[in-house]
Image 1 (spheres, rainbow, N blue to C red):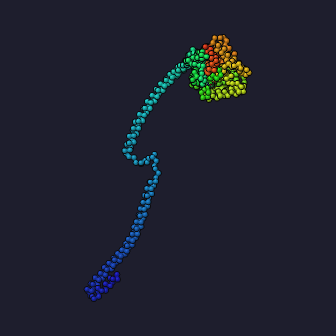
Image 2 (cartoon, rainbow, N blue to C red):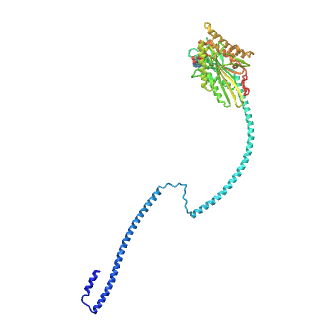
Image 3 (cartoon, rainbow, N blue to C red):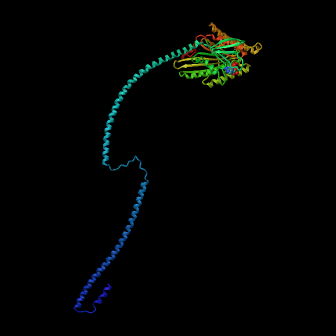
Length: 518
Ligand code: ADP
Ligand code: MG
């Protein structure tokens, strides 16, 4: 503004007339214009400063907005990061929870519709199948009812058949046993075996010619003896036992069986009967075998009881008694012979047998020491009672196996025959003579058999009379010094071999009347 005022004074200093007036007017006009322009400039200036202010303000606003935007972008980024991390750490969605999509596609709808159709069709088929199955089942049930009726009828018939078979079994069993016993009868109910003791002596008075014959050589003379079997010196305990086996087994069927060992002291009687621990004799082997046979028979239940007694000077001593030394007596009831008060011990296993035998032997030793007796001066009797009850036939049987190791049969010399030895010798002689007499009476079918002549024969009566089977071992020494005794023993053996005991009978009774028939 100041600059325009100074300019006016310099342009119009010389002219004041018309032209000057014109000039003044123009100047005035120009001045007016200048003022207008100045106003305009002023306005524009104002406007400019306003706009500048506006620009500044707007710049501030934009800057602020940019800042906000940056913040928002940062927030957004952060939010994205959070979502991502949340998605990453989200627990697995259980498979059963299917995410149901809110929208159903037409292709799926078509598929569902076709499936529904198929389901309807198969439902119809299923119904018809079930209906058919029900009808079939009803028919089968009817058939089954008929079959059950028939089955009951068949069962009734079968029961009859079973009963028939049972009686057939009974008859068959009896028949089988009877045939077996006929065979034994043909062989004789008394079987006599000769066993030669093993000897280390050089000379031998015995010659075995075949399985059944033995020859005694005495001063150049030969004497032959025949037996059911001759066991040479080399014979084993097994072989000897095998000879008695057929007789022993019939004990299970209710027969009385007796095995005797006869011979002079030192001829091998005890070895044959009892044997050694390592190599047991007939006693243990036969009881073991009977236990085995009884265990094998499924339909028959057996009870086996052992008793052991000693006969010394014609009196009976119970070897299994808890109070030994009590004199026992023999009781006769009809044809049955028993020893009341005699201890019987049930045996179930082999160790039971061994235990019982051991007890008996121990008691025998104690008694003999106390009374100063040698074991060879008394008879040892081991008896096994076998009682069986047949579940099928309903019958019970009772058989007894009597195993007897006799006192030495030698005759004592006159010099020895005094005091206790004389009494002993007399008793042994009496009992063995009685045994010989019984066999002789049996041999001639005598009406009277002198069983009661000694305790030994009396006790053995059931094993020696009609319903029994008997094996006698005549034990002989091969030593030349024993020739006389050997001859005497063989003579005794061959005499009893000619004896027939007659037809053996079984001790069998029906279960209801549970008494042993004799
Ligand atoms: P016994 O009882 O007749 O008096 P033993 O049986 O005691 O006779 O026998 C006398 C001895 O001979 C015993 O030592 C016994 O072991 C032995 N003996 C007997 N027979 C045989 C044999 N067949 N084998 C081996 N040794 C035997
Ligand atoms: Mg002996």
